[in-house]
Amino acid sequence: MTRDQLFEQIKTKGSYLCVGLDTDIRKVPKHLLGEEDPVFEFNKRIIDATKDYAVAYKPNTAFYEAMGSQGWESLRKTLEYIPKDIFTIADAKRGDIGNTSGLYARAFFDNMDFDSVTVAPYMGSDSVKPFLDFEGKWVILLALTSNQGSHDFQRCELKETEEELYERVMKTSMEWASPEQLMFVVGATRADALRKVRSVAPDNFLLVPGVGAQGGSLEEVSANGMNDKCGLLVNSSRGIIYASQGEDFAEVAREKAKELRDEMAVYLERYLG
Ligand SMILES: O=c1ccn([C@@H]2O[C@H](COP(=O)(O)O)[C@@H](O)[C@H]2O)c(=O)[nH]1
Image (cartoon, rainbow, N blue to C red; front, side, top):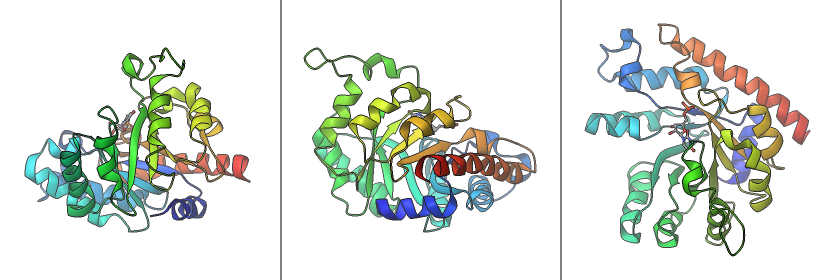
């Protein structure tokens, strides 16, 4: 999917919501546990319930990898079930020496057909570039993450330029790929830094996790992070998929997704007109 196609989806749905499919078998409602593949059954119902309001789905692969080969199978079936006009993100946070990264890329782009994968920048250019060799596929590079530990390295100031490390990551990686192929992860809990992020990367889409369970503010993220093509995919996982753990989980997930979409529609109108 191209940047323009993504923006078209956002305008059509009045939404920049990414639903996180962080499906933990221990949290799947009891009435689904007798199904052959409870994780897929859960995801299927969540997708059916939220697809009118979501422009992206983001399974975090940890939740599937923890279940071994059955988990990978659930992930594959989930990916195939997501409607083709909805952007898909493998939140896998990969990155290794070049030949190994190439195989990670094949795993998510060839073996499975994800639109994008999250990549950790720590190992530098040769660890990221193999993911960029796949035409029509996106790299979503970790820039300023939502967790407390982001202060340990990402916010360290570099002596010679006085920029923070995450800014250097963004600026350097922008030499490797255009905004047609490169997005950045910026946590919703870092809304104070979003204006700086936008000044560094005015055109790149940002994947913003941390709204909902982590307490980030959608209003602040939207005010500080939107560009003229929206430029935001705001993720909520637990706040939607586990809003109820009863038999009504899908209905309640739909309500939560709709609430976020309705708020997003207001910001789209306010900032893009
Ligand atoms: O900085 C980051 C990068 C990734 N994540 C991931 O996003 C979701 C957030 O889930 P919630 O339940 O909405 O908190 C999860 O998969 C994280 O691993 C992040 O939170 N922050």
